[in-house]
Every structure is written in structure tokens, then in C-alpha cells.
Amino acid sequence: MSNENPERRLRIIYRLARGTVAGVWIYSGLVPKVLFRDWSEMTLLRESGVDTPLLPYVTNSVGFLEILFGLATLVLWKRHWPLWMTVGVMAGALISVAQHSPRMLHAAFNPVTTNGMLIVLALVALWAGAALAEKQQS
Image (cartoon, rainbow, N blue to C red; front, side, top):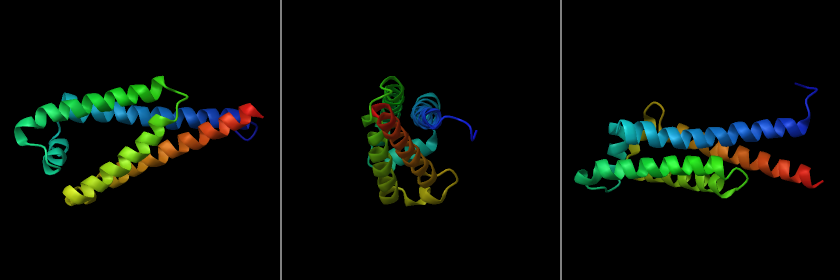
């Protein structure tokens, strides 16, 4: 690995980070929201103000939006806005959970760890993408 081209390493870092961000969006929308309507997802929505009769519809809608956003992160490979939006949405979601469902912050695999990880991965992808663009210009 020490003999590897630094630009190749950056490409690998970029692909892994961005691909993981997209994969998390897709999985998070599909599995706990669309396929299984996980109780914790519905609880978070209910506690943030969604009326109980609307929970299944809102949960599905949020899930499909997350899937579309994950796909956009993949398809719009060289665009930075999906990564910046990931940073903003994850930070906002974490603040919302802290305000409306603070007990969720100490559960296993809680929003602090998952949202924090996604923020860091999006920032890593942004950094690697900027470094690649800089190398290609020089």
C-alpha cells in the first residue's frame, strides 16, 4: 500500500465514503421505514408532531425520499450538494431527536452514533473529492 499512487488512494477513499453515505440513505429509507415500519422510526415521527393516523404514510414518504436521496448521491457522483445536504440533514435530525425524543440518544445504535458517522463520512467524501479535483487541475 505504501507504493500506491496517492491519487488512486484518494479515489478509493472518495468512492468508499460516498458509496457508504448513499448506501446508508438507501438502507435507512428502505428497511426500517418502507419494508418494516420499525417502531423506533414511527416513535420519532410521532414525538416530533406527526399525527398517529398519518404515521404509516409519513413513514413511507420519508423512506422513499431517503431512497431517492441515496440514489441521487450515487447518480450525481461529482456533485457536492448531496454530501453537504447529508451533513445538514443529519445535524438537524440529531438536534430534533435531542429536543423531541431525548431518551433515544442513549439507546444502542442511536442517532448520535449513526448521524455522527454519516456526517463524518460525508465530510471525508467532500475532502477527498476536493483533493482529487485539485490534483486533476495541477
